[in-house]
Length: 313
Picture 1: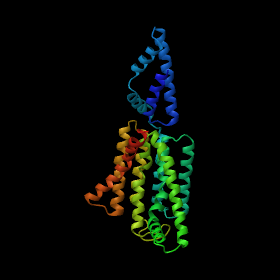
Picture 2 (picture 1 turned 45 degrees about the vertical axis):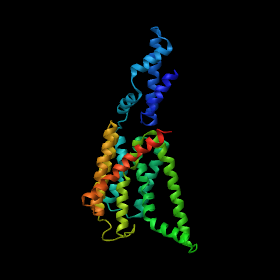
Picture 3 (picture 1 turned 135 degrees about the vertical axis):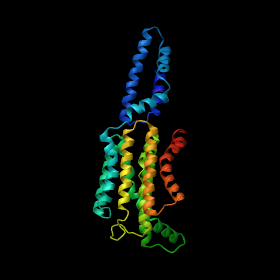
Picture 4 (picture 1 turned 90 degrees about the vertical axis):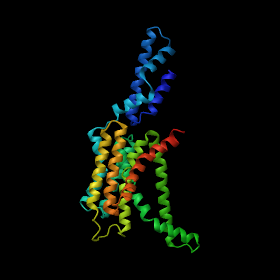
């Protein structure tokens, strides 16, 4: 039965389903092969010949895995709704103009973090990955908005201007960067070993959020303050986030991997173009091309990482 075990492991490595479904499918295949081998043995085949014939009649592992993925990867409407929720939550904050209020942001982030942690501990269902991506948004914002302070603080420390209270804050920021980097190193490789496409599903909100953070920084807005231009991009963000919620729901409902990839690419490009056009004034061909390249890079770079690190291990 070692040959069957090797064959099933080859199918498992290409299956890309959630752990519970994957174990169920592999268990059913194992039962099928045991019954098939016993049936062939009663017909006069040796165990080795019966095993080889059972495997040959089933097909190549990669093709079998592809068919099984398409049969089992489609999420329910409830799972599609759950995957779309973090984008809808963000759209709600912008539609109601509540995003500058600390209480609204803290409540939204607490919900994101709670669902992310519970989902991670309860088997990492596919709908969870957009939640993880949006949970990284505050870290992305702090890193981007604090970059100038960190650079100048390190520069002053290097040239020997002396240690001050400013460097205490620098240590806090560097500590936060270190924790964030550790979380990324702990989370991303585990997801990558399961399926690079889930890493893309997790990262696909970040280009839009990055554009918004860059736009806020570029006009010198300080969060939690009031100003005439504070809500000028809210409508654009609502539209872009609704597109991302649609993308997440479609991702869960589609069966074929190519369709899932195309959904992330097309809707991801649409959302970044809307954001870039409105917030950054990127209205010429070259800028729109660059904006389109950001989600393409975000979606496809995990596939390259899987080839470089997972397949080589």
